[in-house]
Image (cartoon, rainbow, N blue to C red; front, side, top):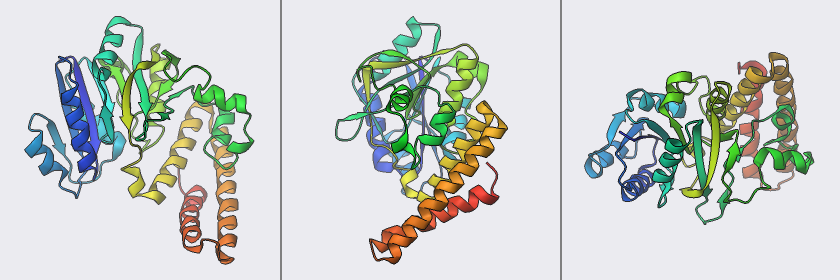
Length: 308
């Protein structure tokens, strides 16, 4: 078996259908297996896959096991010499699977690869990164990001090389991440402490520390619609992103920095919540802003009393 593809689905039946169809349309002679771990979807996903894709190895769950645990369930039964974690809201493009497999076969020092990614409208989706440092932890994806030095953001997002360049990176995003089996056997699966977000950063970091290199392949493409599962749970998404961010930086930059980051993020959520409440009180898009206040309050409560 050359390739095992693991897909974790939750209420994304139509997107998963398109994803599976694209895999088999672009198999390019590879011997592969597709493993779908379904997290108790309520949209008929399991029945649909059984009917239309009987060749899929289907692992229906009785509850929502989440992205990390779901992938680990798939990895545990996978038989391929290469392992592709693929989101259900992706569409495989011509040459993607064969190109990634060939690269790993021809470059034994590389353990992880990721493809060039496009959005639904065909524009470039940023998917290559350096490992985040302490400055990135504080500034990136917070309300302080507009104050970040452009050179710092360019370094983190690796924006200077052309979009289609093939180059060494630290990590690639988990919507289409291929690892060789030897990496999995050496470092294990995804860390289930990361319920969602940062799990692929941590996986790539552990692979890096074990001596493996990662490559961004600009000459193969995947389409990624993005966020179709997490968009169903906005408050949970905010909390888990914040939790995972603190967990990652505590692990690799020290417990003291994890605490500093927690306080900074709590302060930012408190400030933004007050700002949104003030604007809502003045009648400016009140419904939208009160919903934001509700979400920010939940995240702040987690940061103050929860454990990351």
